Length: 262
Image 1 (cartoon, rainbow, N blue to C red):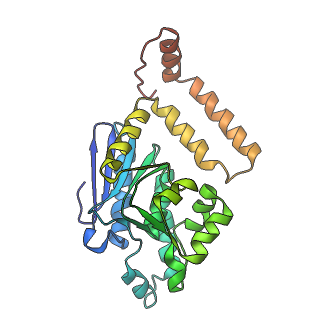
Image 2 (tube, rainbow, N blue to C red):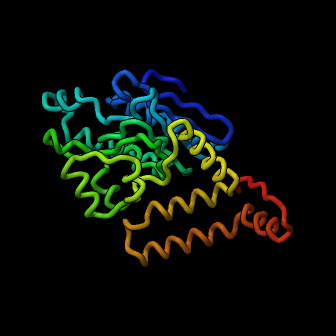
Image 3 (cartoon, rainbow, N blue to C red):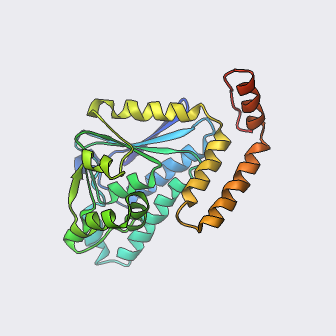
């Protein structure tokens, strides 16, 4: 799928989604949100696709968040700030239902809604020169695409509050120190690092990856006892699959398993 705002292609076992508005630092408008959702659904439907990499076009930014015209228009139209927030939140939930891991390839500016897109991904790999922030507070608004919730889950309430309430930006070193990103690599190596992670995941049983992701996505949002019950139920289901039988036999026989997703 190739559209003006988002490019999506699947090569081998990896889906590549690129935010494609480099002239405006990949800022997102409604059309971009729609195209991103379409791209995620395309990757979800393709059984050959085992992991998805989300990147930004150009060399200056992954994404700087919402196109400022969205907020100007929202003050004058029925599609207001609350609706824009809910619209973006629904799009971010597409990552939760993707059924496969998503990896944000981060470079340059990762700001506002761009950081919220990255937070919705399973993993975040950043270049050494990337900068991160949620600056909405500085223009009288606040994160609305899940940033207040996902950032707390990822780095804790105190650190999340500092980023959100000051609107300050941090560099890659600090982002790694506080657990915002999984890995920091030189800028030319970001995509390669993402592809290596995607390929490692693709070697594992797809049903196991899917159900483990489901359990991980619920962690922290439901009581521990419910989470443990969900974990045991999903683990039990996986033990009944052909992939589990094949994987265990292969381990005993010291062979490399080849999983079929059944």
